Structures are given as C-alpha cells and as structure tokens.
Amino acid sequence: MAGKETDGDRHPSPAVARALTVLETLVGSDEDLTLTALARETGIPLATCASIVYTLEQRDYATRKIVGRSHFWRPTLRLYGLATQLIRKVDLSSVATREMRDLAEQVGMPVHLGVLTGASIVYVAKASLPGFIQFDTYPGKVAPFNLTALGRAIAAYLPDDELRPLLTQLAPGEGPKGVPANEQEFEAELARVRRQGFSTEDEEEQAGIACIAAPIFDASGHVTAAVGLTGFAKDFDTSATSRTESGIRELAKLISQRLGASAPLPTDLV
Image 1 (cartoon, rainbow, N blue to C red):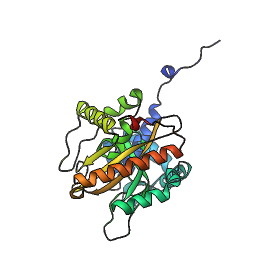
Image 2: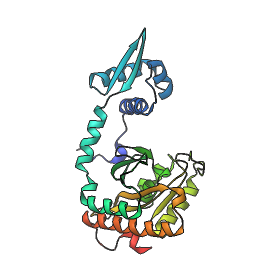
Image 3: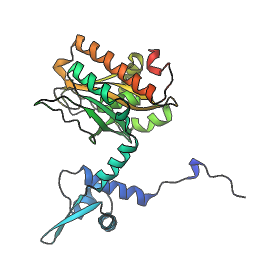
Image 4: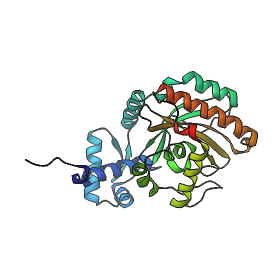
C-alpha cells in the first residue's frame, strides 16, 4: 500500500507557473504586448508564450488587437469578475460598514480594508469622504505588501513559515522616503509593529501620502486582514497619529471580534 502523500512529495507545475507568469505580466503592463515582447518580459520561449496566450484568448482571459502583421495582447475584465466573486465571498466590510464610515468622518481620512494575496496587498473595501480630493486607493487596487501599512500590519503577525517566503519578495520603496529592500531592516520594522500594535508607512510608496493600520484576526487567532487610514503625510503630526492610532486599533479589534476572535488579541499584549 502506498504511503500517504505529503507536501514534500508534491511538485509545482512548470506549465501552470508559466501561464500565471504570462497572465500577471499582461495585467501588470501599461501597454498591450506583442508575443515577442511578452516572451522577452517573462523569459518564456516564444512558442510557449503563444500557446499560453491563445489558450487565455479561448477562455476569454486575454484578447488581441491586430495592427498590420503585429498582434498586441491585453487581459480582459474576466479576471475582475472572478475577483469580484471572491470579494463577495470574503466581504469583510459587511461586518463593520457603519463603523468604518464613522471613523472616516471622525478623523477626516478614508478607511480601507486589505488582505494579503501572495506578496501583494489587495484593497477589498473603502469608506471614503465626499469631496474634491480622493486618494488613489480603491477596492481592487494591488500594492507591494511591504510598502503599505496594511501589509506590514498583517506580516507582523504571520507565522514564521508564512512570513519567510515573503521576505524574499520585498519591493524597494519608490517614494521620497523609500529605501532599498532589506530583509533585516524589514524584520526590525515588523518587530516594532508588534511592540506597538499598529503599523505606519510614511511617503515610502508615494510622495506626500502616509498610512496607519492595525491587524484583523479570525476565530482561529490567525491574522486575516488589516484595516487602515490613509492621509496626507503633513497631517500625521503627533496629535493626529495618537488619534488615528486609537481609532484604527479599536476598529480592528471590533472587526476581529465580529469574525469570532477571542480576547485577548495579540495586539492587546503590547
């Protein structure tokens, strides 16, 4: 009788990995790509790229525009449809819609919920304020996890076996206070998050923008998401940080409790 298969016996599929790389490259590109450009960007042989994009086209995940003898490929919105279905199934915002809106009005900043997907943070909900100025933080937005307060709040409480792979995928900061990716410095930052129970990000991803966030835990005690505030960096003085810290930690605790988390939470122990 064959022994039970373990995780160590399982091997990733190169074909699936290549297909996902092609799809991610199409989504991440600012312009339509030819097969030659796509093969160059992904490092995948041209014939293999062609097979993958033709399959994506048949499944309605990609489409092409023909200009002369050139074919330019781009992703379709079918991916958005899948993401929308997933967000509906994991609709964290439904457990604290009013409280998110109340906090946004109280501090004068938009409130966001984010989840970790791979090495990225995906914004899944937003409570914003009416007005002319609107931050570029919308449901569906994706950002490197280490350059957001949301991502840091989650990463600080991940089990070691989940955190280690992420540390090899740190993105360098592109804002005026951004720094090169460094595992040791980022681990020190996560330790600081655990000491204080919330995370911050100050002009590392984008000039003039700062964020503060706190982790959300589920019934098993696992960190499952984060809730945060985004505002202008100049507005995060000492008094504002104290006010937003209190508000965001209380909101994170409320959402955690509604998801079944029991007290005390890890953030209560700081």
